Image (cartoon, rainbow, N blue to C red; front, side, top):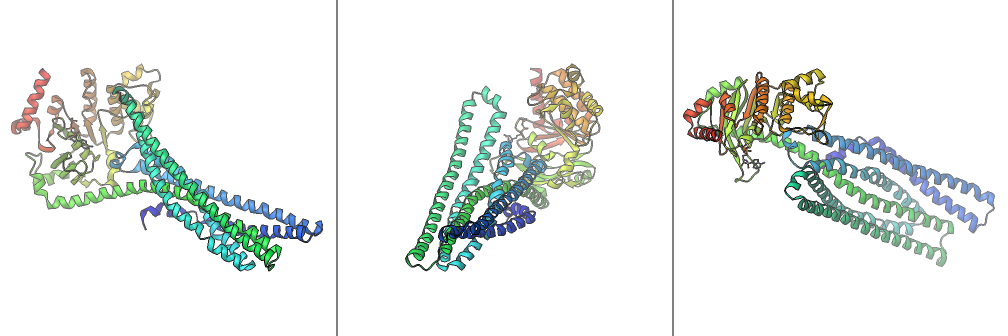
Length: 611
Ligand SMILES: Nc1ncnc2c1ncn2[C@@H]1O[C@H](COP(=O)(O)OP(=O)(O)OP(=O)(O)O)[C@@H](O)[C@H]1O
């Protein structure tokens, strides 16, 4: 089965009891519809044709009223079961979307526009409603009630039955033709809505930057264009819906007209039919067509909803597919690794460990990689990184060094598991990193960038997000103090309960870094990744941060992108990256002595500091 059919099929399997009830009630609805027509025909026959006394027709009218009430109640019950299925469906789909968004591998969480994903989880799920609340009950009714009416009409008068039989198929035929077009348009509409939402959220988040660069107007135009194309596609669907209704009404009118003409001929000209029979058929025929016509309207809504359900499925399938792709890439990378080991490692000038040494070192290493390669996108001209093979011993202080654009961040992201290698393998504690192991890996690391994200919430909450275990206020205070946040906190009126992040109090660059460090202190990770967080800070703040970082690093393996000479000199192992290749590894003194490019880079840095 195609994965696209999965979500709907899976859900409908859980609703068998309710759909069973709808079937049963539809059967009762068919009986009530026929009974209502028969009683009405009987009452009219008694009152107007036979001029029967009141006592004869009053009970008929009373039963007729009862049947009408019962019919209304059955139709209402069917609708309310549909609504309950729809409510369940929305809850299920939304929780699936949210679970997917929160549990998907980090690599995929970083892809795509946030606004687009939110739009699928919110709008597409809402749009799925009518498939369950209208389309499903109406379809079940339509597969039962018209059939019952048709049988009764056939029993009463075969030619009328034949007219119904020949005209009825035009309705589903039309519905199918128009429905397919509606579904396509609906899928288009959701793509446009996702794009529109994505652009909108991006623009709101980057409003200050846009204003500063005088680009707010241009962005406004882009939003306007996207909203117009969304409007156009909505109007396109409405156009199809109106055409649909018009076509259906025409077919229904023609059908009823033909039957009425035929009945009139039999009744008045040929006098081969009783008034009661003709009137009963005339009452049943509109019921028959109306039922099919209602399906037409529900079908249109159902198709639109189906487009939305497909969009949700695409989001969910994309996640699992992408995770599988990641796993298979790692597996195929493993094969490549064994085939082409020599070629990959030849680019490395000097290593901390080589060949059999590497194998041995791996056993005590926290991170090791083999013939690691990465490229952004599929184009050959895109930046690519060749990181060879290396093992990082537990507890090492590693500095990634290189000129701007050399590929330091790319290497750090790759070994932190934020980017998927194009080929090669990464091992953590002797285990290959696969998407399945991502959660346990992420549990053991902290990654501190130059721009840590501050969530809307209190300072305490922002520190506590570092771990999913329950933390006490004392632990938070301890982490904050260790990160050098104590002075700031004494100055704040609400202390740890001060609201920061979006809509809250602003934090300086240094304070943000300290907050990020406090998170790491609380987490106490085994591996710490730093994207030189002290860059751009004044010397005093830098010293506070460096002290905290040293303390934090005591029991962890540290891998940091280093720009400053003192960070580089303090490292146990330096990874020197040049133009996308990890060209050398070793201590500062080793590299100074053996790698001229490194010596040149250090000289330039010294001159810059002196200047
Ligand atoms: N998502 C991306 N898609 C394509 N190319 C990218 C992407 N991210 C980075 N690059 C390119 O990869 C190259 C290396 O970037 P990277 O950020 O790793 O360098 P860096 O050494 O960390 O630089 P810096 O010291 O200036 O931060 C650059 O040429 C950059 O333009």
